[in-house]
Length: 457
Image (cartoon, rainbow, N blue to C red):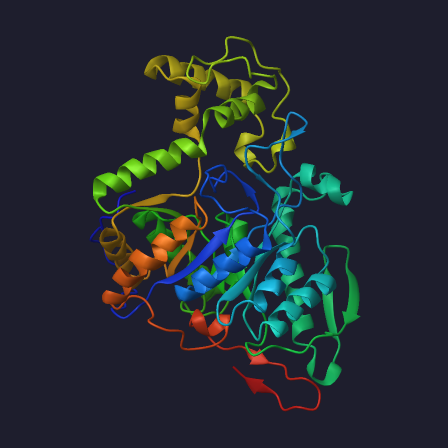
C-alpha cells in the first residue's frame, strides 16, 4: 500500500478530526525483526521503558502489549525464529506507570483463560496506580493448544468464545462499578446459570474504569465490539474495506443504543517510511523479506508437510516428498477456521501455483503469507493519506505494529508526527491526563471511594 490518498469521502466527514496513534508490541510472532543488530533486547525492562517514553514524547495515545499464553512451537520444538513469549503485560505496564506520565497503558488479556473477578481487580489496580491510563485489549482464544496450559484443551468452540467474552466483560464492568457503597454485583457467568456476588476491592480511577479495546472482524467479534468496546483494533487499512467496516460497526452500535462516536476505530497497520518514494519501496521490500527469511519459509511449510524440510533449499522448488496425511499440527498456535482442514488440497494448489509462476519455496511463502497491511511512502505522503482516512472518519487512527524497535519508531516520532501536526491532524500537546481523554471518548460514571462524593470524568 502506498502513501497516496484516494478521493472517496464518507457520511461522517470531519475537517477537524485528528489522528490517534498507538503502538502494538506483539507478544509472539515474526513482526519485529529482533535479529537485526540495531534491535533492542526484546524482554529487557529498559526496552519497554525507553519505548514508552519515546512514544510519550511523540504524544501517542497508548502503548499496547501483546500476550502469548504459550510459546509457539514447530514440530514439537520452541519456534526460535519469532519473538517467543512476553512477560505478563499487567506486570510490565505497572512498572511503566511509574516511568511515564501521560501515555495510555493497554494490556492484552484473554477472556477465555482468565476469571472475571481476578482480572478485573488486576486491571483496576493498573488503572488506579497509573491515575486513569489503563486499557484492556479483550481477546479470546479457542485453540486446544493454548488450552492445554490451563487444563482446558479444546475448551470452547469457536462460536462460544464471544458469548463467554461478552459475559466476562459484563462481569468485569459490574465489578468496577460496585465500589461506591460496597453494593454487590450479581452477574450471570458462562452458560451454566451459576450466579455469584462480589464487590470491587479497588476504587475507580480518574477515568472511571479501564478503556476497553477489542479486536475481531468476525460477526461475533463485531457484535462484541458494538456492545462493549471503547476502541476497536480492526484489520481494515484498505480505504474501501475501512469504509465498509465503519459502516457496519456503526450500524451495530445503533442496535445497542450507542452513538456512532462512542467507539474509536484503530486498525493495526505496519508502516515503512523513506526520504523518497523509491527509498520507502526498497525498505519495504527488505522488511517483507526479513519477515519471511529462508529459515522461516522452511518452517512455514514444515507445518503443512508435517516433516523435517531443513535439507531443502529455500531458493529451490517445493519439496518433492508427500506430506503426512494428518491435518495441521496445532503447535504453532491459533489458525483461522478455514485453515484447519483441507491441508492436502491446499498443498496441491500451492504446487500448481509454484509451477505456473516458477516460484521457489521462499518466493511462494512470500506470496501467500498474511499479516498487517503496510503503508509505504515518505512522511509527507503518509501524513496526507492518514489525514484523509481520519477526516472522512473511516478510521480514527492506527495501532502501529513496529518492525524494528526502537529505530523505526524514532523515525515516526521525528519525521511523521511533525508532518501530521503541520496539517492540523495531530495534537501538539496532551490536553488531558487519562487514556479516555487522549482518545476523546465519552465520559463514564466514576465510582468514588467510600466517604467521597461520586464524580464524573
